[in-house]
Length: 418
Picture 1 (cartoon, helix red, strand yellow):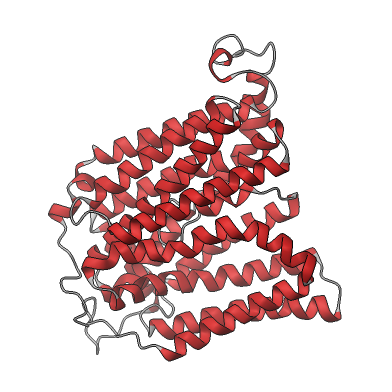
Picture 2 (cartoon, rainbow, N blue to C red):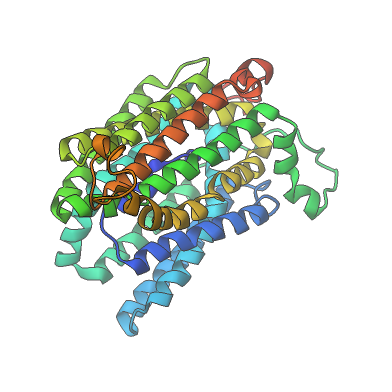
């Protein structure tokens, strides 16, 4: 599910919390193949360079896309293909920006504070989950689409100006000597080879990819399930409750910082709790239960995300984090399009008929989760949540993952020494 700091990020996929038409959904899904394809290229293009300039150029690229939308609104007619094109540009820019951002954070934040930094980073995402739907509606009425796009462009300009004002230290080289020439292909595949040599990190990453599939498949159907049982207004209220949960989760993580040891346990425990809350989302068509479960999911995600980011930042050498993180993101997110595509098919072609009045499972499973419209999607939530929880348990019992913090030494030894 979408998180900048981590692979399993319900918050990004939970954008489905608010109703969207088919074109908007396609626009959202379009970004994932681009992330995967460009992730391969970004591994060998620029991520050994100055991280600050990588982020500046990425923001500038996204700004060009936003500017083109603004110009289309002012001088031409905005077409849906314009949105697709800008999505492709933004996804490409983000593919370079995210690994550079994560690697730069390691150079700016003491090792002991990486967990808290991971929580602070997510505060913006949490507030956007809580505030954006209402704010966009108000802004659209008062200043229109042009004004909203102009605000977006202004924030990009502010971000670029901020990057020009700061200094990000360059890490010491550990992968190759400064005068050693590296082929483009060797540079591009370095992240793959780095992970393959560290079975704990690779195993954790594979778990993230599997967990992403289960979580994404479930939350892609959150809005349809809700609209089968209630109104868009109630859906918005439930989304806001989830946003409150995410804000509180980020505040907890930014204050606590996570455990100093055994971060793997914190990650897997957080995911297991989120998986159990996912099961609760599908158990009964009761709005209070769904709101509480959604609060629980979005509360735990920032804690898992923050611990995950801190773990990766401490275990991967700072000078190769850009390349490793690009591969990390690509592997973790590559399975999400399949989850999106399969969720609707299984929900409406398989589970809904099974849970309909008189369906095959109506007299058995239906006695627990109910029958009728939307209960097939509820069953999807129960199954995906259970599989997510089992995958977290499997990762815990996989020795290279469970013992990673003991067997894999920290690559970042001292804080603020760069």
